[in-house]
Image (cartoon, rainbow, N blue to C red; front, side):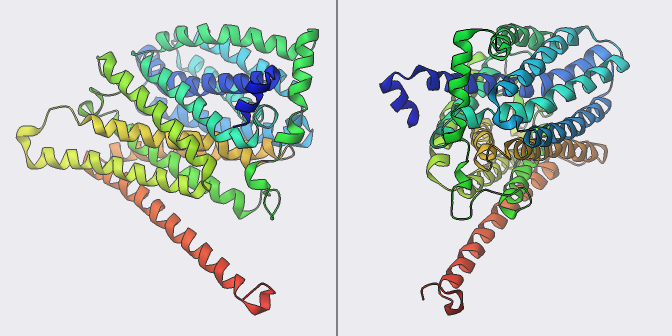
Length: 440
């Protein structure tokens, strides 16, 4: 690890860069998986008085607007060369976090649908600008060879905190926690972005120079050169990550509606259950970091689809067992289900943090992260939410719903295996073709 080398040489400035990136991304991801995904649902249904279907439509609007703003922001950053200017990215993030702080403060006081809609509009702008600005920090702050481990640290920190605290999924609780974390964050970003503090300016200048060495991602350093936005090398991972988020969201939306699946897991009254899931997230994120660093990205995608298939096999087995043996129904599900689910989520989250910077250069990082995270993350979640609502309206049974999710995961797993095999077959054929000019 390059980090160990920096530590031995006592090079504090590059080490500070690691800390800044892990801190920004972990807090940002914690904000999305708690305040946005869970808190807004509670705000809309309990305080504003909308139905879950109405809130889901507003969440769909949030996803689409965020995708639009992210793509516009990312393309603009690349064209104006802001993607390779660390000070500009700090200033963009200062504006984003300051706006989110205000939105987080006022959210528990919203009581009307128009006010909720105005919050969604402003929140989309903040999230959309924040995606390319935050992911773009990787090319300035994190060496390519350490991105798997750094992504693992972000995943571990975000999911451990999200599972251990807070235990109540209410907007007031989420707001209090986030405001406490965001106030010092806004102050720190204000100092970094001001350009008026001499010692801080020297640190920022030192960190900004690092993109000359760190800027070209891992998958842009081969014989084929930088990954182009219109190439299969870019859109292949986008499609695969879209599938990962779609499968995860479609399954999880039904699981959290099933008391027997969550009362000894994510909504358990026992702190030990939350702590156990948090520890599983940490351990599996570290494993994912090692795998990402040492294997090709497709192998990690295979692990993710395989783990989701195994997870839903466990859940559907529980449902079938309860149907065949009614005397066993009513009890809590096996804790192994939520544990395997946590492993799958940590694996793909680690992959998501490292993948987009590694498919980019300083000239493409804004566009690639905006398209990758916006499409694969936000749009996939919106579409799976819409499908889950359709299943609910059509009164699709729990077993059928989870069977669909399991089938999708297995289909993606099998399709990826076939694609890898065919690619190697074609590569081997070309290497033995006399007309290719390569050895026989």
